[in-house]
Figure 1 (tube, rainbow, N blue to C red):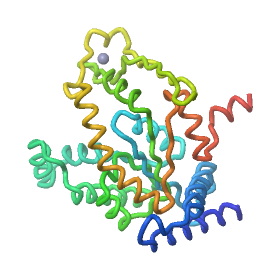
Figure 2: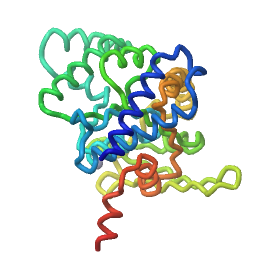
Figure 3: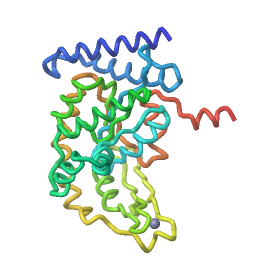
Figure 4: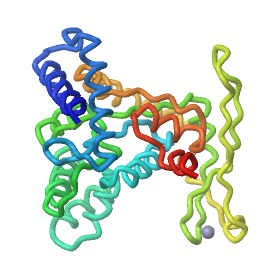
Amino acid sequence: MAGISRAIRACAAASRRSLSASSAAAVPKDAAAAGVRAAAAAAVAGHKGRDREDGRRVQWVFLGCPGVGKGTYASRLSQLLDVPHIATGDLVRDALASPGPFSKQLAEIVNHGKLVSDEIIINLLSRRLEEGEEKGELGFILDGFPRTIRQAEILEGVTDIDLVINLKLREEALVAKCLGRRMCSQCGGNFNVASIDIEGENGGPRMYMPPLLPPPQCESKLITRPDDTEEVVKERLRVYHDLSEPVEEFYRARGKLLEFNLPGGIPESWPKLLRALNIEDPDNERSAAA
Ligand SMILES: [Zn+2]
């Protein structure tokens, strides 16, 4: 326990140093790395039921470009660590569905194809975090936020972020995955018909990601999103990188960015992600006990 308390104090000290530094260059690399390691150690404490000194668990952010699967990993981790998975897309959808003048105002923006402003998103998120605290939630995993450097700066004024996990996947795999997306027009189920098998880079292992095929009753009802063309997907990735690079740099400078290269599909990536986060895999524990 003493070790964990020390790790938390080290983490807090590392982030205080980072916050007072005016540029990334002013932050010693080892302090940044220590911060990331300490944040992961704090997560383990929460996972095992021994929470941090202040009682809360993880306050994490998932970054990653469209199609990388961050929603899936964020959702799995939130179940494992027993904290809510908060996706900003869901916040906007919920706000649109709730009655009142605000949802009308929001519908006006969304229906005209305009981007929902940083202010609105941060208001929705602050409200969601406050409600969570009242309900006794012990942390969160954010998905889809912050998207811009401005949102990251505002978020810093609202709450503490312990760790930012940046999920990465090779571009050729990403593009193939996006082009393989299909939705069932009847039940709304999401599938992927892409079978990815590409050579390893620099003598690295091959990357294999099997398709996620629909059940027979959905097969004839699959549709492709009209904007899932190669040109649009590549443009989406370019726009994402332009916006996200400063966000990554923001958290790297604070010693909170954990880069994770996905080695393949979920069965391969999930255990490695848990290891990178210092979280014991409950499935492995179970099979070890058997
Ligand atoms: Zn279906």
